[in-house]
View 1 (cartoon, rainbow, N blue to C red):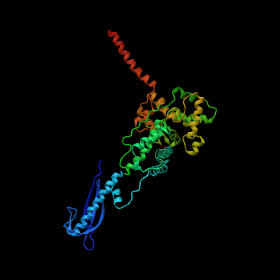
View 2: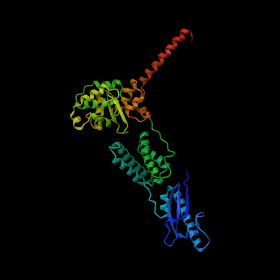
View 3: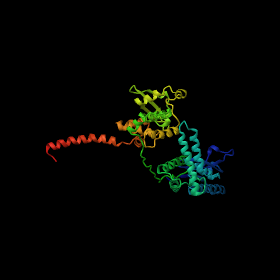
View 4: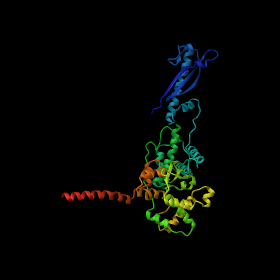
Length: 415
């Protein structure tokens, strides 16, 4: 949309001088927003033409004042042209700065990006997880490295960021950094958030992402089968350490909670649900969305087992969970002992809940989505893939239906 700039000269009666002369002001309106500046000229109100926006007559005084107003109008138009040429957003602030001789400081990318990251750092544990800060910190580091590689600079004026910058950055991520498709797309997405901040503040006028398209490739989610879950449940471990890891992992398999959400659970998160049975009531740290999960018998057995554990009592925790790094390291050891060839991580438990535990057993995807704390069904579909076994069971009903039709056809002599 073309920016509309209008200029009006008028005598400001409310600021009449002691000698009765009225100051002449210029009003500049940009897309409906006004700024007013003094022209440093004065006129008798009877000699001012409101309609023409200038002094009446052809006297030397009138010619002098009107020439000055024409010069000011020309300066405003020149400022408008210069800002447009430099691709600086036409606003009341930029026009005013230009006319008053105040240089518009170039806004650089790195300070804006760093300010964004600093705000996230202050809100870690409140609105953001530590992993979010880590991702944006890495994203900023990659952005600086790219600018050094491409332009031999460590920072850039945000008005210089264009479509080519974005596509070259993506190329660098894929080639020099050797990022996989989804990783590269995520870094570009992080960078896009910074661009949106610039757009929202009117620091840049054109969105460099306007014609940019990228697509996250669907990744095959790993999950455990019923036999693999059973193998882990029945295995007797010689160390208390592996028994604890097994129990916490199974707790997640039967609740669908992510590591951080299991870690944050206290006994107060267990309450009675709408059916009079015990449920887990919590909020996901990642999205702050509610998760309400009925407690299955296996889940209750694990809760009961650690009810009086010292760590649970001392730290007001539902379960004595280890660090995420230790959990994942010990899960690999557990997988070897149980002859599970998949690379076991704690997050696989969440996928297992969505597929093997719920969907495969006929739980509707809408219910699964609610228990997982997802805000839309599309997210659940990435986690919960309909298994071949479920397809087979559903199709068996259809086969039986058509088999009955076939008997009817044979009896009638058709086909």
